[in-house]
Amino acid sequence: MILSICSDPKILEIMRIVNLVINVIRIAVPIILIFVLMIKLMGAITKSDDDGLQKVMKTAPKNIIAAALIFLVPMIVRIVVHITAPDSEYEKCITVTSVSEINASYEKRMEELVSKAEETLNINDYNAAYNYLKYIKDEDKRQGYEERLEKVKEKINNSSDDKPDNPCSNGDCEMYPVASPLEDGKIVFDRDTETLKVKIQQRSTRVQTTSGSSSKNYYLTYIWVEDPYAQSSKAQSSNYPSKLQATKSMLQDEVSRESLQNKLVIATNASAYYNSSYSDCIRSWNRENQKQGKVVCGDGVASCFCYPARTSDASYSEQYTNTQVGNLVITKGKVIRNWPSSSAIDKTQKLDLYGIDPKGNFKVFIDVNAGNDETRKAKYQEIIDSGIKDTITWYVPIILDNKTVGWKNNKSTANITAFCQINRNNFVIFSARSAVNKHVVTDDFETLHCQNGVNFDGGGSVELLYKDRNGEVVRIFESSYDDRENAEIFYFTEK
Image (cartoon, rainbow, N blue to C red; front, side):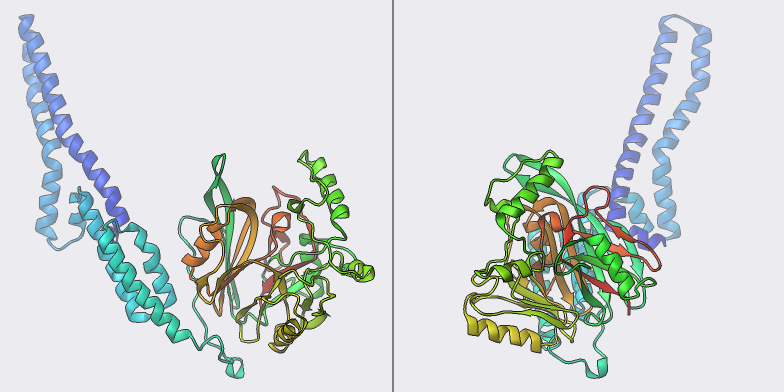
């Protein structure tokens, strides 16, 4: 036990401070004792106080012995430890005083982690080593470790290039271990079942704005799921398509419909939804903001987050109001909207589609040819043929095929829900109901080595909910924000 403690650089940092304090005490206290003794002697001699002088002389040996012991005891302890256990790492604990010793210990641990990652080519070992780089102070050595880890990551990617597209023979797919959470966060919810494991981590970030900076909290939800395709689903408003529904109520209804009472569930908001018109939306938006004493919007102001269904046919506009955005919508395996023509709801707006295919891969379909009927028709058919049973529609891909494509170094702020897949079994939800810098999403997804990461609907729609086995539905943002109505939610549950 002592060996493992004294080889931990973080413990050594604490012991270095302790040893420095001990050294100050072993030098300062004897000096003070002797100094006090000298003052007493000088006082007795100056006053010609024989009785006082005798008292001082009687206590002098005790003070001198005390000073000697305080000075020598730490040294004696080190000698005893060295004689009785010359190879013990405990000696390092009681002698470490220099920063260079601490740095050397960090470098030793870094070497162990990198070597292990090179040997196993395991993504979790790679993550552990990569996250440890911040403790290496020497720039040249850190660069050397980064180069070695880059080669490890390349080997991991090369060895798994074919895995995402390999069908699961007889339903038996390769299982990845649970991904490690990032450091510097507080776990506020932690559940571990045989087929679904969930950790919700509260983190904080300094939000940079033109007026300064402030600390904001956000959440990372780590999800390990045995069968991503079978254990994921969407829930729509119970009054679909005529009305929206508060997310908590929506999940409660879904739990009842799908008999999920005795199962663990983790859910988030998903696609954005259509409003009837900008003017109607803004009137509604302003009513809500006025209730809360907030600034209201002017007619046609995009920042009001209003998305009317764009089509020249009023009947279609009315039909799709308060439903998910986009021209292709698949829910629970049923195609409920497939309208790729140029007269569609969004005939020119580029809206990407996301979904988990039967192999458990989170697919991102980029709408690069908005307005082209034939291209969209072929793309929609590809999505339908892929077997995806639940589509989510929005825009701003963040990471595609392990490459960052969005929000890198972006300092603009927003309320954000984002979603990424690390590997077949591990997913992460980013939830920020207080506006954070957008690059924080990219930074976290890069650190977690997400294969694909995208932005879901944000703003006031951001929601994160969970339900324990035989428990009630809980909103993470319950105490701070009203439960805004949405068109749909996306969730994972146990088998």
